[in-house]
Image 1: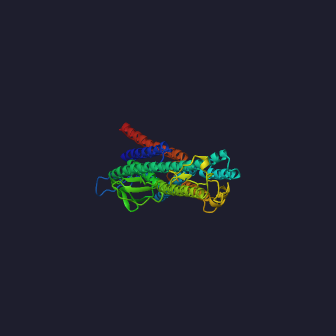
Image 2: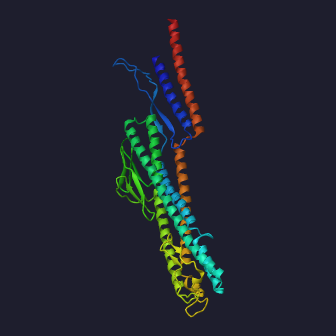
Image 3: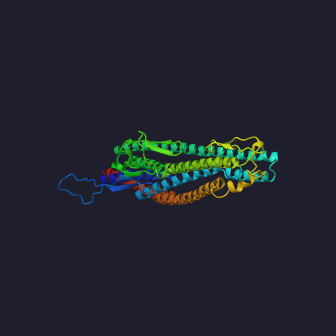
Length: 444
């Protein structure tokens, strides 16, 4: 009769734990990073024999919960981390390259269209070279182009600064996750595998790994008690309970330099948010350099063209612009009488008529600007396509993982009903055993 009490009691304990696991699943059905819990029950092999020569024919010991399990698949987890790394890179590049396109400003207030307007004003002046108002308009349009170069340079510089700020934020996120993982590794070494506490630690570990993977393309492996080990470019970032922090700095040209906290230089991340930011920073740095080259060429070409002409006083044209970069370019001529509209042979509009042949066409600043805008647009287009592909792949990977580790409320409801019935059955065993004992005592 004691077997019935043992079996009933063990069953109620086991199924109470099973119901707790199901309840935990339902309560965390919307919790990010939560992996579905199940329990494994094992038959108890306890014996009631008291004599070495005696072997009971019917010896039953009930059941017990041998472990609490997480519904996970290591391959699917790794797949999600991989696709998240690619998505982080594409998302960062798409965002900042779009901002660089805005900064380049190919609208009516941008360098390209203002330059076209400037040439149109020079053509108008060529039709009436003595018109003072047209001369003033021409000088003003030259100044506007210079100012647009200044504004574009400032806007691109702001983009570089924004990238550096986000990179620092991303590095801080990675460092915090590394620190958390070091603490989790320490707790995993102390926790008992197969317990609910161990499962919670593994959830926290995987969430931290997801965070790090989305930010940087690290190499992940697992050691004793499922502790995480992480390296980047051959440098160890996490081993056991020791974590090494990352650092990032912006170079003068806006590109990013990465190192460990102790100053050891490391290779630029190839992917993840940090990889995407590094790539975007390099691209923006190239755009700034190209813009400076165009500004310098604009100053040289316009001044050289003006110098070949003569003013109304038959003096060679002076400098129209100064500066060597997009940020420093400025208009220096403000007196409309100093415009060198005449050619060396004395034709009143002779120099103005050479604008299209000298300043426009192949190899001109105007064509260089068009090429810069077109190249940037092509890069943005390919980046958008890459982002869409990365998003689709990540969504598929997450869906595949959720099919294994996610919580389905219909399934949990069915399991809860099944376990509840089993629990009630075990409770009924205890009741029957009690009533049987009571009947025996009543007979005695």
